[in-house]
Length: 356
Image 1 (cartoon, rainbow, N blue to C red):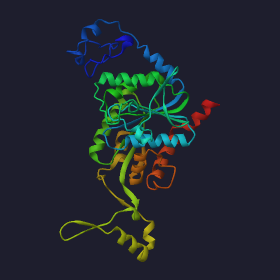
Image 2: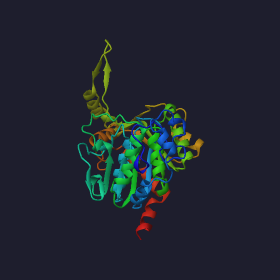
Image 3: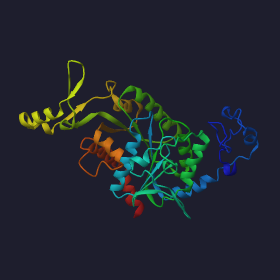
Image 4: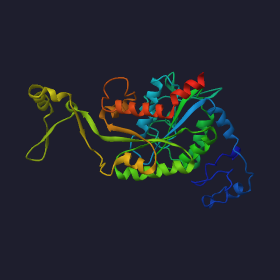
Protein backbone atom coordinates (compact mmCIF):
# COMPACT_ATOMS: atom_id res chain seq x y z
CA UNK A 1 0.00 0.00 0.00
CA UNK A 2 2.79 2.40 -0.85
CA UNK A 3 1.80 6.03 -1.46
CA UNK A 4 -1.72 5.28 -0.34
CA UNK A 5 -2.48 3.01 -3.31
CA UNK A 6 -5.60 0.88 -2.97
CA UNK A 7 -4.51 -2.78 -2.82
CA UNK A 8 -5.75 -5.12 -5.53
CA UNK A 9 -7.37 -7.48 -3.02
CA UNK A 10 -9.40 -4.68 -1.41
CA UNK A 11 -13.20 -4.75 -1.31
CA UNK A 12 -15.04 -3.28 -4.28
CA UNK A 13 -15.99 0.05 -2.70
CA UNK A 14 -12.78 0.59 -0.74
CA UNK A 15 -12.62 4.21 0.52
CA UNK A 16 -8.82 4.18 0.23
CA UNK A 17 -6.07 3.70 2.83
CA UNK A 18 -5.75 7.46 3.41
CA UNK A 19 -9.46 8.10 3.87
CA UNK A 20 -10.79 9.11 7.29
CA UNK A 21 -13.03 6.05 7.10
CA UNK A 22 -10.20 3.65 6.13
CA UNK A 23 -10.77 0.32 7.87
CA UNK A 24 -13.93 1.62 9.53
CA UNK A 25 -16.62 1.93 6.85
CA UNK A 26 -19.16 -0.74 5.95
CA UNK A 27 -17.25 -1.37 2.72
CA UNK A 28 -14.21 -2.40 4.81
CA UNK A 29 -15.95 -5.31 6.55
CA UNK A 30 -14.23 -8.60 5.72
CA UNK A 31 -11.39 -6.97 3.76
CA UNK A 32 -7.99 -8.61 4.41
CA UNK A 33 -6.46 -5.14 4.76
CA UNK A 34 -8.98 -3.79 7.25
CA UNK A 35 -6.71 -3.83 10.32
CA UNK A 36 -3.74 -2.35 8.47
CA UNK A 37 -5.85 0.49 7.06
CA UNK A 38 -7.49 1.23 10.39
CA UNK A 39 -4.10 1.72 12.08
CA UNK A 40 -2.19 3.33 9.20
CA UNK A 41 -1.30 7.06 9.33
CA UNK A 42 -3.83 9.20 7.47
CA UNK A 43 -2.82 12.15 5.37
CA UNK A 44 -2.93 13.66 1.91
CA UNK A 45 -2.20 11.38 -1.02
CA UNK A 46 1.24 12.32 -2.40
CA UNK A 47 0.10 11.27 -5.88
CA UNK A 48 -2.30 14.22 -5.91
CA UNK A 49 0.73 16.51 -6.05
CA UNK A 50 2.02 14.68 -9.13
CA UNK A 51 -1.44 14.84 -10.74
CA UNK A 52 -1.69 18.56 -10.04
CA UNK A 53 1.69 19.08 -11.73
CA UNK A 54 0.56 17.12 -14.82
CA UNK A 55 -2.76 18.95 -15.01
CA UNK A 56 -1.14 22.38 -14.59
CA UNK A 57 -0.60 22.49 -18.37
CA UNK A 58 -4.24 21.56 -19.15
CA UNK A 59 -6.53 24.59 -19.46
CA UNK A 60 -9.96 22.94 -19.63
CA UNK A 61 -11.19 19.55 -18.40
CA UNK A 62 -14.56 18.25 -19.58
CA UNK A 63 -16.21 15.01 -18.47
CA UNK A 64 -18.54 13.18 -20.88
CA UNK A 65 -21.11 11.23 -18.87
CA UNK A 66 -24.23 9.16 -19.45
CA UNK A 67 -26.77 7.50 -17.21
CA UNK A 68 -27.07 4.43 -19.45
CA UNK A 69 -24.83 2.57 -21.83
CA UNK A 70 -25.49 2.56 -25.56
CA UNK A 71 -26.61 6.19 -25.85
CA UNK A 72 -23.66 7.29 -28.00
CA UNK A 73 -21.50 8.85 -25.28
CA UNK A 74 -18.20 7.63 -26.73
CA UNK A 75 -19.28 8.64 -30.23
CA UNK A 76 -19.95 12.15 -28.93
CA UNK A 77 -16.61 12.21 -27.07
CA UNK A 78 -14.75 11.20 -30.23
CA UNK A 79 -16.53 13.69 -32.50
CA UNK A 80 -16.17 16.51 -29.94
CA UNK A 81 -12.42 15.82 -29.86
CA UNK A 82 -12.20 15.75 -33.66
CA UNK A 83 -14.10 19.05 -33.85
CA UNK A 84 -11.99 20.83 -31.22
CA UNK A 85 -8.79 19.65 -32.91
CA UNK A 86 -10.10 20.92 -36.26
CA UNK A 87 -10.52 24.33 -34.58
CA UNK A 88 -6.76 24.20 -33.88
CA UNK A 89 -7.10 23.59 -30.15
CA UNK A 90 -4.62 21.21 -28.52
CA UNK A 91 -6.81 18.29 -27.43
CA UNK A 92 -6.37 15.18 -25.29
CA UNK A 93 -8.98 12.43 -25.10
CA UNK A 94 -8.77 10.22 -22.00
CA UNK A 95 -10.82 7.01 -22.03
CA UNK A 96 -11.55 5.86 -18.46
CA UNK A 97 -14.13 3.27 -19.51
CA UNK A 98 -11.87 0.48 -18.30
CA UNK A 99 -14.15 -2.47 -19.07
CA UNK A 100 -15.49 -1.18 -22.41
CA UNK A 101 -12.78 0.92 -24.09
CA UNK A 102 -14.25 1.83 -27.50
CA UNK A 103 -12.34 5.08 -28.05
CA UNK A 104 -9.33 3.51 -29.88
CA UNK A 105 -11.64 2.17 -32.60
CA UNK A 106 -13.65 5.39 -32.84
CA UNK A 107 -10.45 7.36 -33.40
CA UNK A 108 -9.03 4.88 -35.91
CA UNK A 109 -6.23 3.81 -33.55
CA UNK A 110 -6.83 0.08 -33.12
CA UNK A 111 -3.61 -1.90 -32.74
CA UNK A 112 -1.57 1.07 -31.53
CA UNK A 113 0.67 0.79 -28.47
CA UNK A 114 1.48 3.16 -25.63
CA UNK A 115 5.13 4.19 -25.47
CA UNK A 116 7.07 5.39 -22.47
CA UNK A 117 9.70 8.10 -22.33
CA UNK A 118 11.58 9.85 -19.56
CA UNK A 119 8.57 12.22 -19.33
CA UNK A 120 6.05 9.39 -18.79
CA UNK A 121 3.53 7.56 -20.95
CA UNK A 122 3.05 9.16 -24.35
CA UNK A 123 -0.52 9.44 -25.73
CA UNK A 124 -1.27 7.88 -29.09
CA UNK A 125 -1.75 10.69 -31.61
CA UNK A 126 -4.38 10.95 -34.34
CA UNK A 127 -3.04 14.34 -35.38
CA UNK A 128 -0.27 16.49 -33.94
CA UNK A 129 -2.89 18.29 -31.82
CA UNK A 130 -5.09 15.30 -30.86
CA UNK A 131 -3.70 12.70 -28.45
CA UNK A 132 -5.54 9.71 -26.97
CA UNK A 133 -5.01 7.45 -23.95
CA UNK A 134 -6.99 4.29 -23.23
CA UNK A 135 -6.55 0.89 -21.64
CA UNK A 136 -7.52 -0.39 -25.09
CA UNK A 137 -3.93 0.28 -26.19
CA UNK A 138 -2.59 -1.98 -23.42
CA UNK A 139 -4.64 -5.13 -23.97
CA UNK A 140 -2.91 -8.10 -25.67
CA UNK A 141 -5.84 -8.31 -28.09
CA UNK A 142 -9.11 -6.48 -28.61
CA UNK A 143 -11.15 -9.48 -27.38
CA UNK A 144 -9.44 -9.50 -23.99
CA UNK A 145 -11.90 -8.99 -21.13
CA UNK A 146 -10.97 -6.59 -18.33
CA UNK A 147 -12.25 -8.25 -15.16
CA UNK A 148 -11.14 -5.84 -12.47
CA UNK A 149 -12.54 -4.78 -9.13
CA UNK A 150 -13.01 -1.10 -8.35
CA UNK A 151 -9.66 -0.52 -6.60
CA UNK A 152 -7.62 -1.73 -9.56
CA UNK A 153 -9.67 0.35 -12.01
CA UNK A 154 -9.25 3.40 -9.80
CA UNK A 155 -5.51 2.75 -9.63
CA UNK A 156 -5.24 2.83 -13.42
CA UNK A 157 -7.21 6.08 -13.64
CA UNK A 158 -4.81 7.62 -11.14
CA UNK A 159 -1.90 6.34 -13.22
CA UNK A 160 -3.39 7.86 -16.39
CA UNK A 161 -3.61 11.26 -14.68
CA UNK A 162 -0.22 11.01 -12.97
CA UNK A 163 1.98 9.37 -15.59
CA UNK A 164 0.65 10.44 -19.01
CA UNK A 165 2.61 13.33 -20.50
CA UNK A 166 0.06 15.40 -22.42
CA UNK A 167 2.14 18.54 -22.76
CA UNK A 168 0.17 21.76 -23.07
CA UNK A 169 -3.52 21.13 -23.73
CA UNK A 170 -6.43 23.45 -24.33
CA UNK A 171 -8.90 20.64 -23.63
CA UNK A 172 -8.77 17.28 -21.89
CA UNK A 173 -11.96 15.39 -22.80
CA UNK A 174 -12.64 12.50 -20.40
CA UNK A 175 -14.87 9.71 -21.71
CA UNK A 176 -16.33 8.01 -18.62
CA UNK A 177 -18.28 4.74 -18.38
CA UNK A 178 -22.06 4.84 -17.88
CA UNK A 179 -23.51 5.38 -14.43
CA UNK A 180 -22.18 6.89 -11.21
CA UNK A 181 -19.72 4.32 -9.92
CA UNK A 182 -16.14 4.07 -8.66
CA UNK A 183 -14.57 5.50 -11.82
CA UNK A 184 -16.69 8.65 -11.63
CA UNK A 185 -15.93 9.24 -7.96
CA UNK A 186 -12.22 8.69 -8.61
CA UNK A 187 -11.91 11.07 -11.55
CA UNK A 188 -13.75 13.82 -9.67
CA UNK A 189 -11.70 13.38 -6.50
CA UNK A 190 -8.39 13.18 -8.36
CA UNK A 191 -9.08 16.27 -10.47
CA UNK A 192 -10.87 18.24 -7.77
CA UNK A 193 -7.83 20.30 -6.76
CA UNK A 194 -6.97 21.14 -10.39
CA UNK A 195 -10.50 22.19 -11.36
CA UNK A 196 -13.04 20.56 -13.67
CA UNK A 197 -14.86 22.88 -16.08
CA UNK A 198 -17.87 20.63 -16.03
CA UNK A 199 -19.69 17.65 -17.52
CA UNK A 200 -21.65 17.07 -20.70
CA UNK A 201 -24.32 14.41 -20.24
CA UNK A 202 -25.48 12.36 -23.23
CA UNK A 203 -28.89 10.69 -23.35
CA UNK A 204 -31.52 9.36 -25.71
CA UNK A 205 -35.07 10.80 -25.73
CA UNK A 206 -37.07 8.06 -24.00
CA UNK A 207 -37.97 8.02 -20.32
CA UNK A 208 -36.05 4.82 -19.57
CA UNK A 209 -32.86 6.71 -20.40
CA UNK A 210 -33.85 10.02 -18.83
CA UNK A 211 -34.56 8.35 -15.49
CA UNK A 212 -30.89 7.43 -15.24
CA UNK A 213 -29.75 10.80 -16.60
CA UNK A 214 -31.55 12.49 -13.71
CA UNK A 215 -29.35 10.44 -11.39
CA UNK A 216 -26.28 11.60 -13.33
CA UNK A 217 -27.33 15.25 -12.93
CA UNK A 218 -27.86 14.67 -9.21
CA UNK A 219 -24.41 13.07 -8.96
CA UNK A 220 -22.80 16.12 -10.57
CA UNK A 221 -24.60 18.46 -8.18
CA UNK A 222 -23.56 16.39 -5.16
CA UNK A 223 -19.86 16.30 -6.08
CA UNK A 224 -19.76 19.91 -7.23
CA UNK A 225 -19.20 19.34 -10.96
CA UNK A 226 -21.05 21.93 -13.11
CA UNK A 227 -23.34 20.48 -15.78
CA UNK A 228 -22.29 22.23 -18.99
CA UNK A 229 -25.30 20.80 -20.74
CA UNK A 230 -27.27 17.76 -21.87
CA UNK A 231 -27.18 16.37 -25.41
CA UNK A 232 -30.14 14.37 -26.71
CA UNK A 233 -28.60 11.81 -29.04
CA UNK A 234 -30.44 9.53 -31.49
CA UNK A 235 -33.25 12.08 -31.61
CA UNK A 236 -35.10 10.54 -34.53
CA UNK A 237 -33.69 8.63 -37.50
CA UNK A 238 -32.71 11.05 -40.28
CA UNK A 239 -31.24 10.20 -43.67
CA UNK A 240 -31.75 11.05 -47.34
CA UNK A 241 -34.76 9.32 -48.85
CA UNK A 242 -32.53 7.78 -51.52
CA UNK A 243 -30.40 6.06 -48.85
CA UNK A 244 -33.29 3.96 -47.60
CA UNK A 245 -33.77 0.36 -48.56
CA UNK A 246 -37.37 -0.36 -49.62
CA UNK A 247 -39.03 -3.71 -49.04
CA UNK A 248 -42.34 -5.19 -50.19
CA UNK A 249 -44.05 -7.91 -48.20
CA UNK A 250 -45.13 -10.91 -50.24
CA UNK A 251 -48.26 -12.99 -49.64
CA UNK A 252 -46.16 -15.50 -47.68
CA UNK A 253 -44.90 -12.79 -45.32
CA UNK A 254 -41.42 -12.57 -46.81
CA UNK A 255 -39.71 -9.27 -47.62
CA UNK A 256 -38.68 -8.62 -51.21
CA UNK A 257 -36.16 -5.88 -51.95
CA UNK A 258 -37.69 -3.28 -54.33
CA UNK A 259 -35.15 -0.53 -53.69
CA UNK A 260 -33.96 -0.19 -57.28
CA UNK A 261 -37.53 -0.01 -58.56
CA UNK A 262 -38.40 2.78 -56.07
CA UNK A 263 -35.28 4.77 -56.93
CA UNK A 264 -35.96 4.54 -60.64
CA UNK A 265 -39.61 5.50 -60.06
CA UNK A 266 -38.58 8.57 -58.06
CA UNK A 267 -36.03 9.52 -60.69
CA UNK A 268 -38.58 9.30 -63.53
CA UNK A 269 -41.84 10.35 -61.86
CA UNK A 270 -40.88 12.58 -58.92
CA UNK A 271 -37.24 13.73 -59.17
CA UNK A 272 -37.89 16.60 -56.72
CA UNK A 273 -38.34 14.01 -53.93
CA UNK A 274 -34.79 12.69 -54.29
CA UNK A 275 -33.35 15.56 -52.22
CA UNK A 276 -35.68 15.07 -49.26
CA UNK A 277 -34.49 13.96 -45.82
CA UNK A 278 -36.71 11.29 -44.29
CA UNK A 279 -37.18 11.33 -40.52
CA UNK A 280 -38.72 8.83 -38.15
CA UNK A 281 -39.01 8.76 -34.36
CA UNK A 282 -37.14 5.69 -33.13
CA UNK A 283 -37.43 6.30 -29.39
CA UNK A 284 -40.57 7.53 -27.68
CA UNK A 285 -40.17 11.24 -26.86
CA UNK A 286 -43.80 11.88 -25.91
CA UNK A 287 -42.65 12.68 -22.37
CA UNK A 288 -40.86 15.79 -23.59
CA UNK A 289 -37.40 14.28 -23.98
CA UNK A 290 -34.18 15.75 -22.64
CA UNK A 291 -35.25 19.35 -23.19
CA UNK A 292 -38.15 19.05 -20.73
CA UNK A 293 -35.95 17.25 -18.21
CA UNK A 294 -33.37 20.06 -18.41
CA UNK A 295 -36.03 22.66 -17.66
CA UNK A 296 -37.24 20.67 -14.68
CA UNK A 297 -33.75 20.12 -13.25
CA UNK A 298 -32.38 23.57 -14.04
CA UNK A 299 -29.52 22.48 -16.32
CA UNK A 300 -28.65 23.68 -19.86
CA UNK A 301 -29.94 21.84 -22.91
CA UNK A 302 -27.31 21.84 -25.65
CA UNK A 303 -29.35 20.33 -28.48
CA UNK A 304 -30.41 17.23 -30.40
CA UNK A 305 -28.39 14.95 -32.65
CA UNK A 306 -30.37 12.69 -34.99
CA UNK A 307 -29.67 9.00 -35.40
CA UNK A 308 -27.63 9.12 -38.59
CA UNK A 309 -26.37 5.85 -40.15
CA UNK A 310 -23.50 7.81 -41.70
CA UNK A 311 -22.36 8.97 -38.25
CA UNK A 312 -22.45 5.36 -37.06
CA UNK A 313 -20.32 4.44 -40.06
CA UNK A 314 -17.84 7.24 -39.33
CA UNK A 315 -17.47 5.91 -35.76
CA UNK A 316 -16.93 2.38 -37.05
CA UNK A 317 -14.26 3.63 -39.45
CA UNK A 318 -12.59 5.84 -36.83
CA UNK A 319 -12.92 9.14 -38.68
CA UNK A 320 -14.34 12.60 -38.14
CA UNK A 321 -17.90 13.21 -39.33
CA UNK A 322 -16.91 16.79 -40.22
CA UNK A 323 -14.36 16.13 -42.97
CA UNK A 324 -16.83 15.45 -45.79
CA UNK A 325 -20.51 15.83 -46.61
CA UNK A 326 -21.48 12.23 -45.81
CA UNK A 327 -22.91 12.95 -42.35
CA UNK A 328 -25.36 15.50 -43.70
CA UNK A 329 -27.94 14.92 -40.96
CA UNK A 330 -25.72 14.68 -37.86
CA UNK A 331 -22.62 16.81 -38.52
CA UNK A 332 -24.47 20.18 -38.63
CA UNK A 333 -26.34 19.29 -35.41
CA UNK A 334 -23.10 18.34 -33.66
CA UNK A 335 -21.40 21.51 -34.87
CA UNK A 336 -24.21 23.69 -33.52
CA UNK A 337 -23.89 22.00 -30.12
CA UNK A 338 -20.11 22.41 -30.01
CA UNK A 339 -20.27 26.05 -31.14
CA UNK A 340 -22.91 26.73 -28.49
CA UNK A 341 -20.76 25.05 -25.84
CA UNK A 342 -17.68 27.13 -26.69
CA UNK A 343 -19.59 30.39 -27.00
CA UNK A 344 -21.66 29.93 -23.83
CA UNK A 345 -18.72 29.03 -21.62
CA UNK A 346 -16.19 31.40 -23.17
CA UNK A 347 -13.65 28.68 -23.92
CA UNK A 348 -12.37 30.43 -27.05
CA UNK A 349 -11.96 33.79 -25.27
CA UNK A 350 -10.25 32.20 -22.29
CA UNK A 351 -7.82 30.45 -24.61
CA UNK A 352 -6.80 33.71 -26.25
CA UNK A 353 -6.46 35.42 -22.88
CA UNK A 354 -4.30 32.62 -21.51
CA UNK A 355 -1.89 32.84 -24.41
CA UNK A 356 -1.70 36.63 -24.49
